[in-house]
Image (cartoon, rainbow, N blue to C red; front, side, top):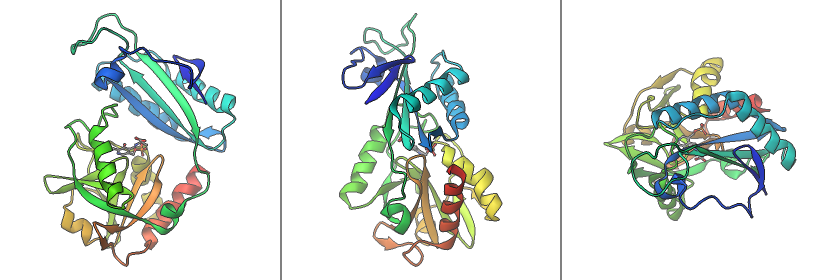
Length: 278
Ligand code: PDD
């Protein structure tokens, strides 16, 4: 498997990142995951814009231009020969002896890798998957795509152990998002999702649904918080994300959502998304 460190090709099995990389020791860094379809990176501009925002919020200097980052993505696709895959990119604050405060005179470290990802939709996407409502135990800056993912990891594991595909997180009674996805419900033909705030990551997939797919399909979207009871009473539900694309959620904490099978609005949104990435 191949990757890049600061734009240079490396073998993932051989290369070692310095132990005092702040990403290792503090989770002090940010990341993006981008999908590759038919040999091309999908929605790269939106991902890089969000990356720059995450860097700004953490005061990590941006040392690569959009064009350079696009070139690195293309290089990984070309060198690996992977036409359908996912590219992982992370930038840490850099290497420095361990101390909490920001070090001076360090250069951020960019690492990237590419892996194949299924070109064909799996069973979850086609038939729907189960969600588990879980407490949102993350910090209060979920809008930053930071490397600190322990809350997300613990939540996903809780869902997995309950036989569910995704944990749907609830904070102060209101449904925020999945552990690695955004969450939508459909009620009376209207799509509801948590508003952009510090409590969720504004997903690229979410943005495409809210700004393009739903309006094109004539599905009204309300970006407004809703509670657990509202979610359970919805007629349809789904999660969205770069890896998940659109996964219908047909059961929530053991209760069927609507009819308990994939609903028409979700299916239309899913198909419109696939048409967009194709
Ligand atoms: N996760 N919310 C959270 C907490 C996420 O981790 C993600 C994506 C999303 C969806 O964002 P997008 O549509 O831009 O992929 C929402 C990535 C894929 C991951 O951690 O692997």
